[in-house]
Every structure is written in structure tokens, then in C-alpha cells.
Length: 327
Ligand SMILES: [Zn+2]
Image 1 (tube, rainbow, N blue to C red):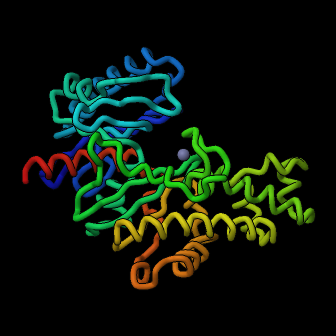
Image 2: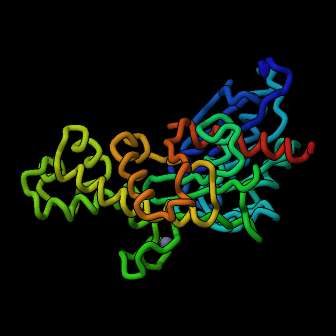
Image 3: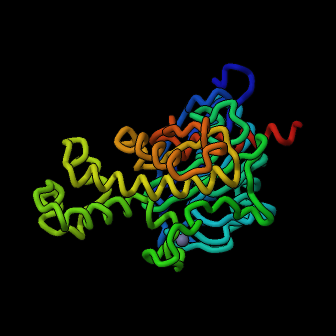
């Protein structure tokens, strides 16, 4: 176990519905894994569940003979990096939780904490699409849009550790209201939810679309997943919705390329699972809207981690943290 002599780390991915835990070796191999429900509506129960779960899993892994060296935690929410504190989460009723300290006290190991999108970006660099790449931008496209940025081989965190909230760059100041309370963020144009909304708009002028049938006749019920299924069947309205949506996503990516000059842009999250339906449109939108000298040659690719992005990303944070300490 942890056969290469480098030991392994405990990766913990905390979401609104589940907490995923895995022991991951230096090559990104998951040796043991488990999933547990999140008591996300009760903040105290959530803190309790987190602490006891780490303790239990850590003991279990050690009993199996695993040489666990560190803990990496990726959590949905805003993180105060210096203090190792989770400030708040969008889907979990807890605030100001010293997650890093809890992990250190329970295991006696070094622990590293970041938000889920930064964790996923660390995972892509660890064993995914950004292996060996020092400068890249990562976007996770799901219910919302999250981001992570690496500059010169290091994650960009900002003054308090809350940087790289790429989902909230503004695409249209008069656009729909975002979950953050402001209007027209990239998130309201490039999330899975947004894909469903674009399709609802297109369907109004194309009533032959299978999307209406899928949504029980109500355009407002069209989801991103339905659009993906319809597009696979060649549905014209669904393909058009992808095109509009890709244009907005491309707009956001152009801004990010102009700012960060990355070698690579990685698209992850649930929507990227149907990436073959939109990756070419996104690349086209970027080359049409960007400054040619800046966007030419920047590779835009899909995540290679899929469902395991969260927990592998958390492990990536731990491996990255260990290496930073050694250097
Ligand atoms: Zn926003």
C-alpha cells in the first residue's frame, strides 16, 4: 500500500449533499474511498460529522497499513486561507468553521484547505489535463461556475485566500440576477442552469423541439441535462442553445486569457461531461472575440478527472501543500 514509498494523503471533498473521502497516493491512485451524507442543514451537526468522519476514516486507513502523510480538504464556500477557516458555504448552514484546525487536531497531520474549485484545479494539475502546466485557468461548469488559476506553478489565492472567483466576472451588467446578488455574472450565462434558460428562450421560436416534450410542455422546466440529451439527438433548438451559451462562455474565457496569459484553459464540472457538444463553439468564440496575439495558441480542453475531480482535487491540495513545505 502506498507502494512507491511516498505514502498517501487523505483527500476530503465537502459538498452540500455528500462528503467524499479517499486515500490517494502520489500518483493520484485512489487506494480506499468512501462517501457519506452531509447533514448540511444543521451547522453544528455538520461540524460534528466532519470531525468524527476524519477521525474514523484516518483510523481505518491506518489499520489497513496506509502511511497517511497529510490531509487535503476541498469545501464549497469562501475560505480564509491564512486562518484555515471556512467563512461560509452556499449550500451548507455553517459559518466560520476552523476546518483545517479540526483536521490537524484529529489526525496530528498537516492539513491543507481550499475551496472546491481551487481543489479541482489542483487535481487537474496533479493528475488531470493540466499535468506539468504552470500557467492555466480552470473553470468548473455546474449548477454555478467556479474557477481556479495557476500562475508560475502556484495557485492564485489573493490577499485573504478568496481570489479566483471567476464565476462572478461580469458579462452583462443588465443580465439576469446571479446567486451572489449582482447582475450578469459569468455564472448566470455559462452554468448548466444558464444552458437550460437559453434553451427555453430558443424553444419559444422553435416549437418542434423535443425539449418541450422532455420538459412536459413547459419551457421554463428545461434543464441543462435535457439540452445535452436533445443535442445528442441532433435537436436544432438544443444545438442553438449550446451555440449561444458557448458564445457567453467564450466571452468570459477571452477576459481570463487577456488577464492571465495562460498556456491552457481547462473546463470541468458536470456540464463538461457533454463537452464534445460545445468545445469547438467555445474555441471559435474565443478566437473571434479575443485579441489575436493573446488568444492564439492557448489550448482550451476538457477536464480529465470527471466524477473524481472533488476528492482527487482535495488530495492534490495536500500533495501540493507537502511539496511547498519541503521546498
Ligand atoms: Zn455573481
